[in-house]
Image 1 (cartoon, rainbow, N blue to C red):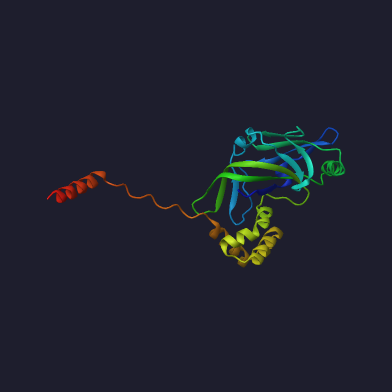
Image 2: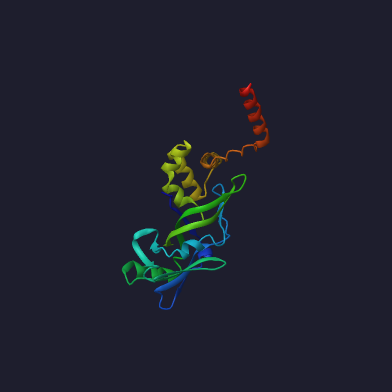
Length: 234
């Protein structure tokens, strides 16, 4: 099963704003062409990466902080509408008349909450030759979320969820990884922790494909076959 990853956008990228009576709002769940913070590599989502996923008409829901118990809307019900443009994927959400829906409406109108995030799985990506940058060319969108913390376009949330798997795959101590990711989030990453994260990324890289075999000269093989046949006939 393909792992689900999570990314978040800072307020200046999400551009979330309340509309009408405040029980509806719009914001960019995904932005194209915006580089992530170094983790230690950078990541960017290519324009059109979500096109096929949106056309598939799979149900996508909107949550608060990725909490599936706090549903804000869904594409199937028409309370979540997703539209792609040259900037990314814009989401329009009609908030439910629930306690958390009303609370969120007030927070958005006050400007206390203005970040968005999304959950996805990678369909097609490409790394630079030195693995310092990753470009996602196609993804499958599973959900979008309004986030009430301090979002930034980083891999921290996805990485923390996957720490045990990452540690197992790379042979790096899980507690040391957790401390390094905490330091990365807090902006206090030291050289040793940065080196540890770089080592984990290096070990997690896909192996280089085997070189293509040299082309076989079929005429030479045929000549050899003829020589062997003549020898057998003697």
